[in-house]
Amino acid sequence: MYQLVIQFPQDFFPSFDAMVEFEDKLHACMPKTCKVDGHDTGSGTINFFIYTMYPEAAHRTFRKYLGTRAVEQTLRIAYRATDSDEFINLWPRRDPRPFKYMYDEAENPFARGATRVIPKRKAPTPKAQKA
View (cartoon, helix red, strand yellow):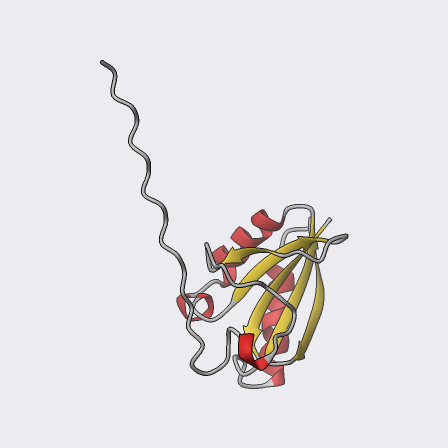
């Protein structure tokens, strides 16, 4: 089992009702193989928790139904095995920053002035030419 975490900056939702409305939409769009397990707030973040055996499929479902450009430019998504503390980043792709439920101010990816530096993809290696 895996825990998928969808993380927003604390000030992303204009009101508590907007955050609850988003959570309701999350419940509605996720397949039955996923269990949306609520949210928490604090230390500059809002985290929504989903338990699933298929975290990458749940991520694709989220992006299909709720992943508008404005949303995707702001959030972070990662997952971990429920018996592990190590997260695997899903969004933004190739994000080298460690994912946590909450951050110290110095490492907060949502803090004012924080930059999001995503490494470029490696160029594909050319196939060997036949002689």
